[in-house]
Length: 88
Image (cartoon, rainbow, N blue to C red):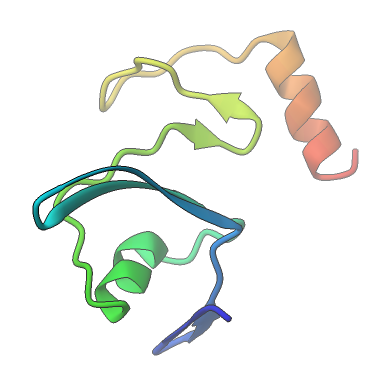
């Protein structure tokens, strides 16, 4: 049903608990929109504030083990997948 936020309802495409220990859990959330801090705000609204957030993928581009602040050139396949994702 989504989570009601101050700027409208936010929906997760998928959500799964990866692991859970005591009162902490690691979850995987897939969203299809890029509103400001949407994952943090969704989980806070559900009573589960985020301690640490890691982005693992942007559209069809997997980030792998890239560190914060690092950049790399996209491969031709990644560029093609990005174009396909937006219908070009």
